Length: 351
Image (cartoon, rainbow, N blue to C red; front, side, top):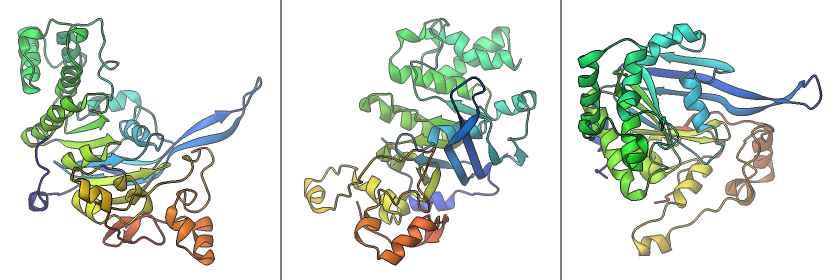
């Protein structure tokens, strides 16, 4: 992979107004009871009060373990799954209140790349038709202009335009993901939601796709919401990182600050699981092991949602401090230099 962007490069990148502003976003899935009437007896709180901004040309990494609500957040932002409540402002326009027909023109500006390139491409269509489909639907090109545009897009993502008549099964996993990226870029969007775009690929292929995404961001001025569970990938590509746990963001910081000075116990545990190439440093560092399983989003713990697995709660806090964790939900506010949702946040050197 290419070297991560330097702090100076990120500081020099102008921010301006956010291209995307998410405020108190919630997505609940109803739980239906048994029987003929099937009343709603509860809700799975997949996303429960998420807020963040993404600026022009910025890559925000959204990380967390499986089941924490990352992909649901991305789909709610895109209005693919209507939000239960909250606000999603894209280029100054509220998306959550739009109907399907009202949302359609904005699809040109914000696109998604799905996790599994084997499932997201129609196996019955040749690559030409897959990449051309957005252009045909929005009536942006036809005939020779359509063929030329598809060729440009395939070349842009590092594929041979002469292979446009092949079918997805004739390509490798990395090439299929490049086809998905070309399809997402067809309408010249301002922003991409990347839902774990390299997790289904071999490690040897991931670097090429990550380098492609970085190059496209710089060449086309794109903004990314980069959803992932692999922190080593996020460290290479993201400008800022939001850590998510059980439907909530628990820490948000610039990439280097988060990796060098994490303050939330959950972030510290995630970072401690990243293997180090230096065996001496690997032996010397402290590994943080979480106890128990991820609680159910249908019945999250009271107070701090992480307290049932938090090593700080179990080993370091007084009974009075523990009671505060049980009863008072921590807000995502600056603690230790950047926002962290922990009453007793403190910086710990992990890597």
